[in-house]
Amino acid sequence: MRARKAFNQLTFALTLVCSGVAYAQSATEQAAAHVEAGRYAAAYELLAPQEPDRAGDPEYDLLLGVAALETGRHTRAVFALERVLAVQPDNARARAEIGRAYLALGESAGARRELEAVRAQNVPPEVARSIDRLLSAIDRAPEAGKPSFSGFVEAAVGRDTNVNSATSANAVAVPGFGDFRLTASSKSRDAWFTGVSGGINARVPVNRDWSFIAGASGAGRFNGGESRFDTTALDGNVGAAWSRGPDSVTAAVQLGLFEVDDDKLRDYSGLSLQWQHTHDARNQTTAFMQHARLRYSGANDVRDVNRTIYGAGHAIVLPGGQALLFGSVYFGAEAAQRDVQPGVNVAGNDVIGFRIGAQYTLDPRWMLFGALASESRDYEDADPVFKQVREDTLTSLSFGASYLLRDNWRLTPSVSLTRNDSSLNINDYRRGVAQFAVRRTF
Image (cartoon, rainbow, N blue to C red):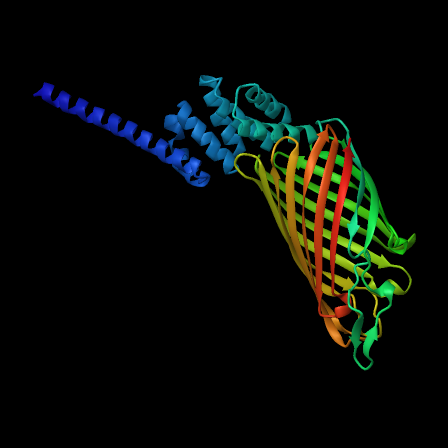
C-alpha cells in the first residue's frame, strides 16, 4: 500500500515537471513568434513573469533581453543579456543586442566594445550595415568629459525657377481698381545660381550631465542675371544641454540676419527648447518649443511678428538598419506687432504644419532621401487692399541622393518643389530648385 502511494506521488510529481517543461517550451515558442513579428510588448508580458524560474536559460534570457530592449526597459535588457553571455560568450546576437542596450543607456564605451566584437565576426551584410550605423552614431557623439567640435563647408550650383518666390500671373485683381498689371520685378524670375555655406558647432562638457553648446553658420546665394535677389543669411546660437541615460534636454538662445541684395530684410532673436528620448537604438522621440522675434526693415515693418511654435516628432530605423523614417507635427501662432492701419494687421496668423520623410541606405556610400512638408496659415484680419482674409498653405516636396566620395566628402544632387496656395493671388506661387552640392565635414 505504501509503495503504491509513493509511486502515485512520484507519478504526480513527474507529471507536474513535464507539464512545466511543456509550458515553458510553449511560452518560449510563443515569445519567439512575437519577437519575430515585432510584437515586443506581447513577448515581454509573456516572458517577464517567468524570470524568477527561468533566468539562466540562454534561449529564454535572449528573448527576454530583446523584448525588454525594444520596449524601453534598457537596464533589465542588460541583466538578461549578461546572463546569456555568461553561458554563451560567443553568442553574436546577444552581444549585438547588449551593445544596443548600452548605447541607449548612454554607455558609449561599453556599446563600442560589444558592437566591435560582433563586427569582427562573419556576420551577414545587413547585420554588418546595422552595426556600422551604430558605430558611426557613437563616433559622432561627444566623448564624455572632452570638448568636441564639428563643422562643414559646402558649395552648390543649380537652377531656380522662381528666385523671388513671386506669382507668375501678369495681373492681380484689386477691388475698386480692376486688374492691376505687375511689373517684371514683381513676377517670378528664373535663374542659374551658385551658393556657398559653412558652419561650426562646439560642445564643452561641464560635468557628467551638463554641457555648454554654441554654433554659428552662414550662407550666401548668387543668382546669375538676377543679382537683385542675391541673399545672405547669418545664424548663431548659444545654450546648454543636459543628458542622463536615454533623455536629453537642450535650451539655446538664437540670433539671425537675412539680407537681400546686401540690404537687411529682417533679423530675428529667440529661444528654443527641446527634449529628446531615445527608446532604443532604433526609436527616438522629440518634443520642442520655439519662440522668435522677427523684425523687418523699413516699410516692411508691418510684417513684424512674434512666432511661437510647439511640436513633437519621432524617428525610427526599420529592421535591417537601411531605412530611416521620421515625422513631426507642430502648431502655434505669429502675433503681429504693428498695425498697417488702426486696428488692422496683415501679419498675425495661426500656424499648423507637419513634416515626414525617409532615408534609405543603398550601400556604405549611396543614400537616398526624401521629405514632404506642409504649413497652413490662417490670418486674422482682411487685407486692406484686397478686402479679403489671407489663407496660405505652403507645401514642399524634396528628394535626392547622397554619395560619400571619400571620408568627410559628400556629393548631393537634389530637387525641391514648392507650392504656396494662397487666397490672395499675389501671394500664390510655384517654385522648383535643382542643385548639385559638394560638402566637406570636419
